[in-house]
Amino acid sequence: MSKTNSSLLSRWSRMGLGLLGALLIATSAHASPKVLKKVPPEFPVSAVKKGIKTGSVKAQINIGGDGKVTEVNIVESTPAKVFDKAVIEALMEWRFEGTGAKQTHELKLVFNSED
Image (cartoon, rainbow, N blue to C red; front, side):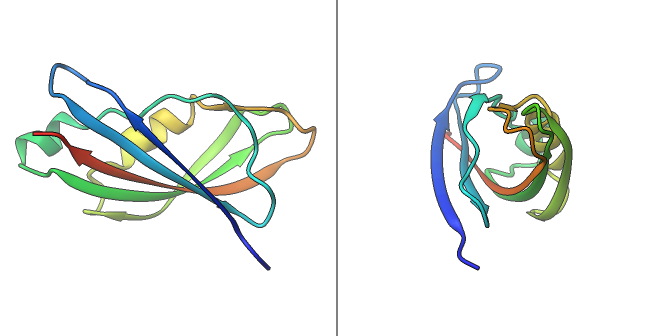
């Protein structure tokens, strides 16, 4: 089964920290769904306080037939659990073009701070 890969690079500043956003790599057995609304995850203040500047989270998202994300499951994260909550909160706000059918996709979000 072949997988389709697509990547997106988002930049934003949060709380004046000048942080580089998440690199998103979507993989699926089916063509990636069209994103209608994308909410970038916040770089956690706790990570900044601990001096953590990079990390990644691989998440599986379930999308309902109406295009709403119904569930987010963390597949793996480095460092463990540092960025998980931010990723779950952001991905639950994403909206995709509705297809009438439920879908499952994986995304990898890579965090890098811009100190």
